[in-house]
Image 1 (tube, helix red, strand yellow):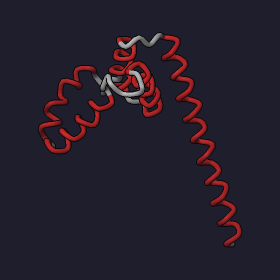
Image 2 (cartoon, rainbow, N blue to C red):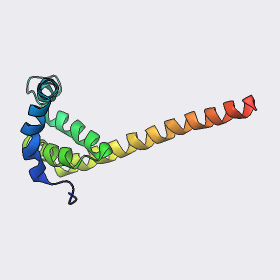
Image 3 (cartoon, one colour):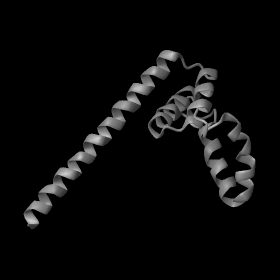
Image 4 (cartoon, rainbow, N blue to C red):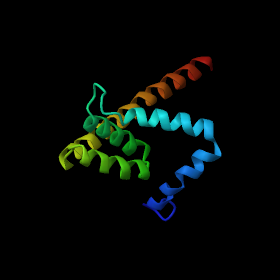
Length: 113
C-alpha cells in the first residue's frame, strides 16, 4: 500500500460509521450480506468475485481484506491469478465497449455538420 493507504486506516472504520450512523449501518448490513455463508454462491467464490472487482477498482484495502478471506475460504493462488485475468479481460472489454460509443458520437457529430 502507498503511504496514503495504510492497513491501520481500517481501524478508523468505526469512527466513519459513527459520523454517519444511519448510512453506515445500512452500508455495513449490505456489506455483511455479501459475507454470508448460506448463499447459493459459496463464500470462496464470493471472495474471488470481490477480488476481481477490487482489482478493477484498485482498492488496496479490498484487495488486502478479500485476499485474506479468499485464502481462508479455500481459494488458491492459481484461482486468485485467474480471477485477476478474468477481471482484466472484462475491464478491457468495457473499454472497447465504450470506444463504440465514442465512434457513434463522432459519426453523429459529423452528420450534424
